[in-house]
Length: 362
Image 1 (cartoon, rainbow, N blue to C red):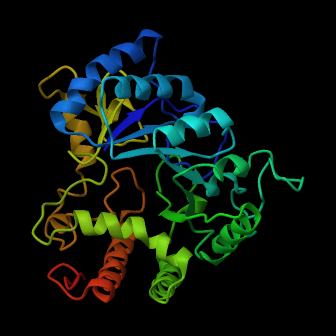
Image 2 (image 1 turned 180 degrees about the vertical axis):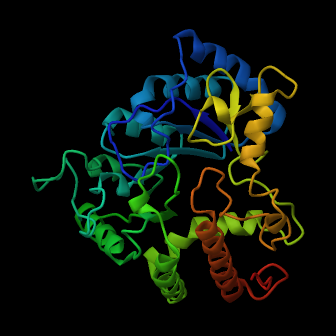
């Protein structure tokens, strides 16, 4: 996956945001896009890159640059098997939908971004700003009438200390489906306890005692044919089936050949959400030797995966608990092992036992 970082600008201020509030956005000038396209084309070709994603902040605030980049790549004859675009959906307009559909982009609508931080209320099953029924809806809700016209999309939900159960989200999807007359597909994430995220959202071990049994309940619902439970796990199962190899090496989640995160100057970073100088690991355009700065950045990226425990962990090749920016590694590690057990069980139920889904973890 080639992750192209545009900047930190966003029209929301979400309490759970994993981006650091102290980060400075990269500086750009109008010529940056043209230079970037010219240089990135041979890099994509030489490295066989088939997946691309555009990141903010809120990427729709950078739409002219994103459109110029992607159209330039297409004019050069490049094709992609997967184009990812994550947005809070509040700025989505007809012209965005038309272009994203033409690109065959997979658009992820962040449902969680318009929830009130530290609220005990269930997610609001609003139909969006442009509801045909004229309901009073929050000004920052996704434009669901535009979302309903996207050819490939999912609605993303976030498990946090305040939201440990998926059932309210499924009701949101059911309301949307009833209103718009089409299916909506869920995707779920687990909060990252980074510097930018308010500690009140961090998952705790006590949370996992409650949350993990709920995940097993959802897994059973998947096997019984529940559509939302099915698609909630589908992306995670795909990644597990692709990445988990019992004899594989430990690797960072977001840095390596599988994740190449760059800004428009070609600087490469250890996280596709944080283009920070201290996380700069090199350049994809200008070969350079190690420097104290890049060596410190790489050491930070690898601080968990190079530890003794991680290097001998049975799930090291797939692990989703090694975020190097997290302040709750012990919780992340435990959750990753629980998720492996869950995904391995689903895989065994659906495909039979094999040398991967029978691997045991502590």
